[in-house]
Length: 142
Image (cartoon, rainbow, N blue to C red; front, side):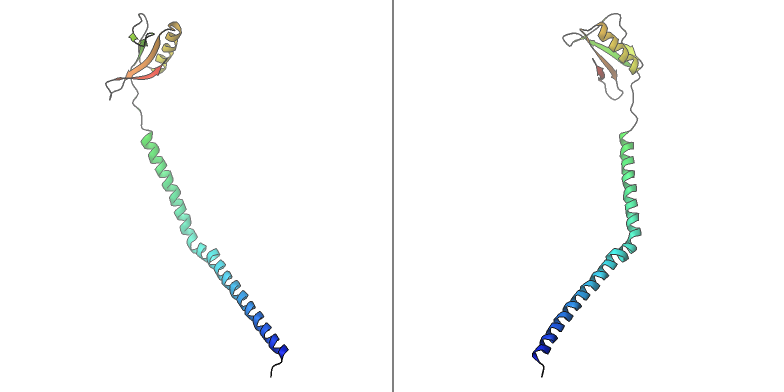
C-alpha cells in the first residue's frame, strides 16, 4: 500500500513533470518557429525580395521618367512679340513714336518697363500670336 506522503510526492512529481514537459514543448516549438521564420524562410525568399524591391525602384524611376518626358515637351516659342498700349479706361490705344514690334521676349519686356516709367497713366501688355490659336496671347501685363 502507498502511504499518504508517497502519494503526495507522486502527485507533485507528476505535476512538476507535466509542467516541465509543457515548458519544454513550448520552448522547442518556439525555437522551431524562430528558426523557421527567422532564418530558413528569409534565407529562401530574401534574394527574391531583393529582386522585387529592385524591380519596384526601377519601375518607379521609369514611371517618373516617362511622366517627366511627357510633361517637358519643347514649347513653341513665338518668333514675334508686340507691345500693346491701354489707356486709363482699359481701351487699346496707340502712342506715336514708340516701338511695338520685337523679335525677343526680353527686349520687349525691357521696353515695356521703360514705357511704363515714361507713360505712367498707361498700361502695357506683351502679346504674341501662337500658331495654333488665332487670338493673341498676353505674356506680361504692367
